[in-house]
Amino acid sequence: MQDRTITIVGAGSIGVAFAIVFARAGERVVVSDPDPARRARVDAEIAERLDDLSAHGLLEGDEAAIRARVRVADDLAGALASARHVQECAPENEALKRDLAREILALAPSDAVLASSSSAIGASRFAGQLPEGQRARCLVAHPGNPPYLVPVVEIVPAPFTDPAIADRTADLFARCGMTPVRVAREVEGFVFNRLQGALLREAYCLVRDGVIGVADIDALVRDGLGLRWSVIGPFETADLNTRGGIRAHAARMGPAYARMGAERGQNDPWSEDLVARVEAERRAALPIERWEDGVRARDVGLMRALAARRRGASS
Ligand SMILES: NC(=O)c1ccc[n+]([C@@H]2O[C@H](COP(=O)([O-])OP(=O)(O)OC[C@H]3O[C@@H](n4cnc5c(N)ncnc54)[C@H](O)[C@@H]3O)[C@@H](O)[C@H]2O)c1
Image (tube, rainbow, N blue to C red; front, side, top):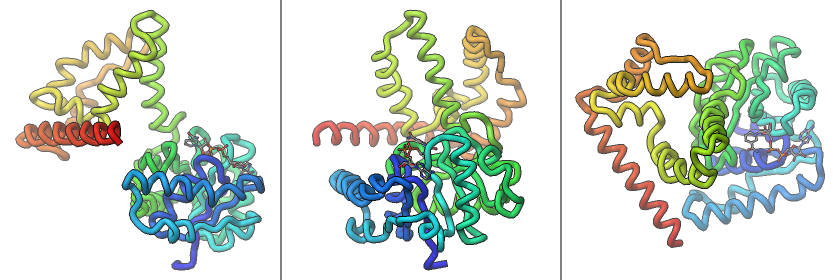
């Protein structure tokens, strides 16, 4: 296994950024792209980004050694010859991804995993036509941009993806310092973009209706919701913002949120059962007797985030 590589197919924004993620973690990386101009830029782009990471104290390990772990291959067959994980980062085009998946799986070793960085095209769409033995090794691993700065990656299997392959992919990303998040099934936009879309849809409505301006929405998220979300997620926020935890929050705020949803034509009130399920997960993570500790941890996290912002502003 030691000689096996991570192969990146498509050396654009995401491909180059993923090469950094894997090489930084000690993996041997091969990068491939049909465009010779892109291939020629890979090493310089990686060097620039590593310099930036280093300047901000975010690079562990030797820059030259990280760069030396990345090889740019002239042809796809050579890039895939010893791949154990293929990260496909080609343009967001279903027909292109379908043809590419067929080509990759024909050229890569028979146990290689094919993970697509796609933002919206599930493995059902790009690998559904492939033989069972091949498509079982296909899934989506959707990053934030750029993945060496935004650690979350959504692991999205198709119904035909072997669950062991999803586990293996999540393990690889975790070992490389990322935060793999398991999505149970393919839904449009996966989860990252559904959440982003929910906020953006409402923001557009509020601007349309003259309630607030664009810059103030951005300020509200940057210095309010987003600042807090850089420390804790929305369920943790609801749980820690109301004494009594998330059940008390749902009782107090649920009806108002249901009315706001109905105003936009969305009728998904939080049922008793649903709140109980969410509460069970929160209480398993933080027993109610330790609620005050959670509040303090949130506040310490916010202080660290503010201190880091202040250091960033003065550097
Ligand atoms: N940019 C983002 O914010 C972002 C975030 C998450 C996921 N993604 C997804 O990552 C993928 C890549 O996006 P990007 O922003 O890096 O695009 P990009 O345009 O920057 O890069 C695409 C690269 O693919 C190469 N390419 C073209 N045809 C190819 C082929 N047949 N085989 C292999 N490579 C080919 C191009 O030469 C180019 O270098 C897309 O599926 C996109 O949806 C993008």
